[in-house]
Length: 163
Image 1 (cartoon, rainbow, N blue to C red):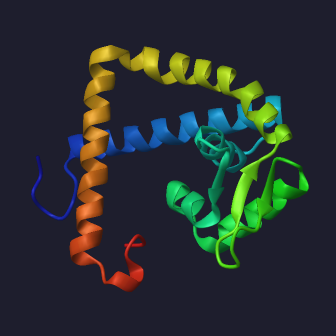
Image 2: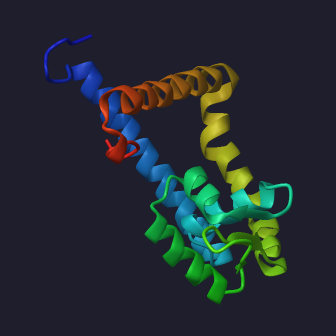
């Protein structure tokens, strides 16, 4: 493994292969959600979080934490989803409204989730196989942990989560 400021050929190849795989898979999955179900990746992410919540509702700031979205992005996207009848905002206190999945939102996620999972299995799980999938999961967790430690130790509190 290289130690200088640049990636060596093997590191560069692995990094670029990862980027291409990620972009290709993400684009394919997004197009399928949009074409077949009329949902964006962002809609899907919100609906998954709400549908997995015990009560079908979460506070907006909790959704922001779960999705790693900025407050303004969350607000704008929830407004669009609310207009389409997928979610509704309910006041529980003045500062943090709750976001609830509607019957239409639940129907949308229940309609697309099985096909979405089947595509993940076909284009990701089955390609990796059990052993490599376990290794990838462990490596992914290590990368996330390393970034979180960096953010805590190296980033000033006012920009933590953005560096």
